[in-house]
Image 1 (cartoon, rainbow, N blue to C red):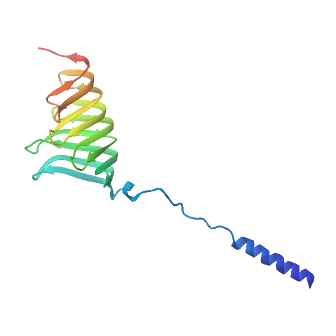
Image 2: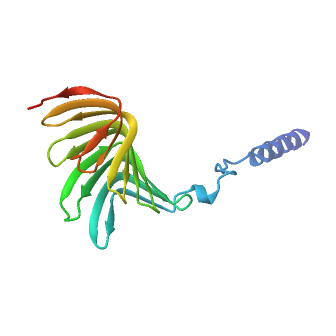
Amino acid sequence: MKAATVVMMWLLLTLTAFSCEEKIKPSVLHNLNSAQLPKQESWNSTISISDSGKAKALIKAGYIRVFEYPAETHLSEGITVHFFDEQGKETSVLTAEAGKVDDVTNNLEARGNVVVVSSDSTVLRTSVLFWNNGSKLIHTAEFVDIVSPKEKIQGKGFEADQGLKNYRIFRVTGEANTE
C-alpha cells in the first residue's frame, strides 16, 4: 500500500505542476495612445483633392493611413499624383515612394525617388518635394535634376508651377541650348 500511496502522491504532484504552467499571453502595448493609431486605413486607394467640384490632384497609393492628431494622411507603398489645371487638364504626374497630405491645407509632401513628368515631357528628379495646394507651386531645398527638350539642369533648391513651365533653380549647374 505504501508503494501505491507514493505513486499516487507523485502523480498528484506531477499533475499539479503541469496545471500551474503559465499560458501564452498576448502581448499588450501598455504605452500606446489611441491617438497614435490611424482612424482609417486603406490599400490600393485613391484620394481626390478638389475645389468647387474641380479636380486639383488625384493621389493613388498602395497604403493610406488617416490620422486625427495631427490631421494628416500618410501615403506609402508607392504613390502617384496627377495634377490638374483650372480647366481640368492634366499638367503633370508625380511618382514617389511615400508621402503625406496635410488634411487642413491639402498640401502634399512626397519622399523617396520623386519624379515629376510634365505634359511637355520635362522630367524633374529629386528626393523630397512639396506641393502647395493653394498656390499650385512645387518646391524643395534638396538637389534636383531637370531634363527638358531644351536643357539639362541640376542644382540645389527649386520652385516651380506644378506643370514645370516656369521654374527657378538655386545653385544651378547644367547645359542649355540657346538660339
